[in-house]
Image: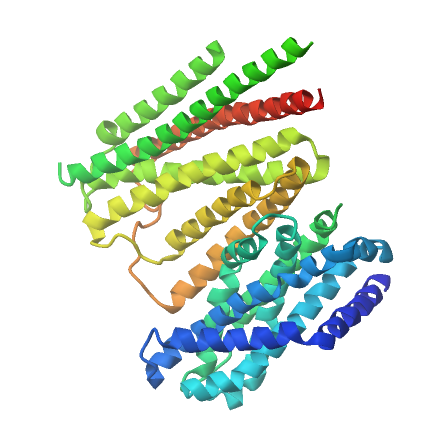
Length: 224
Length: 47
Length: 225
């Protein structure tokens, strides 16, 4: 299908661009680490407290990191008007979004997977048996953040105060992801862990709904 | 009536918000009207 | 002009009658007493606010589809009026809650979702102030408006599921749950009055937006000379 193959080519471009400099990934990882450390000063990090607050803090760190990481997504395309070139290169503008969403999801997942062992060590939580569940949660959560974040990055790139605007618009919209992913992660890290399938379902539904909305309206975001 | 103060406060605050909103709309409208008059006068002067 | 004054009189009159009904026609509630009467203002404002946001959503969709500036004017108008109504909801709720349940706020599903709804439309209005070019502003805020409106039921569902995981005091029962028939009639009369008030405020605010557009046209003409 032309849409998917175009998106795949563009995804390759996004990933290659990032791996050339790796500056986005490295700064994002360090930022998440800093947020986790700074937040842990706000409560008593004994094991029971960590289990209660840890997952929420982890997801908040991911959300803050994402809202910064997503900024260059469309700002990069304003230099030399490469966005115009992208629009001409593909038949369906949704391919541009699919590629950027996939790239952002990959970058976010990379950050989360790097942070996971650090988080486990700092807060003395183990999740070994629950790794598939944790990965699924991270994947669906990152996908949700990327879908909405990429769309909003396209909007904020055209506005003033864009550095502040993107987090401002993104965080309220992502309330469902934050709430549900925290709950699911808490269940995965408690003494008797299990995967909360209702939460997984809610996250998948969120991702599906917003991907559909973006498919319906995305081309208008890329208009001149 | 028990809690009369609270009911009174709630209704006053509620209506207050609506009234303040309406007042701000009226003020902005009248400011714009004067500016529109001013612009029309300048334009007809230039003619 | 006469029409506007008449509309204003009807709206204010209805709201006054609705308040009278809330105080003197509706029976006293058994457990909470008189303070329950705040419910008539609080819940009817919530319904009217939600209807207004629905109009905003429709206006946003119509703008994206048709690109007529009138739809953009309607969108921003309904967003502002909706924010006003939800502000009333968020202010009257705690005033009711404090004497009855001893707490100003609780993070239950309905309150939290209402708060997020309010914040989303504040963001919509903020976004508009940061976009200068009128057509860009109209299109991008319409797109954000669509995202925001579609998010609201998901927010409600997610938070409701979240709260089932952490049981908390359920306050403010359900609006229609076991309402006395007279109370129900008074409630729906209040809902009607609030909707008429909303329509009046929308009409006035829409005129303001149209005037803004006229002023902008004149300004451009003046600059061209």
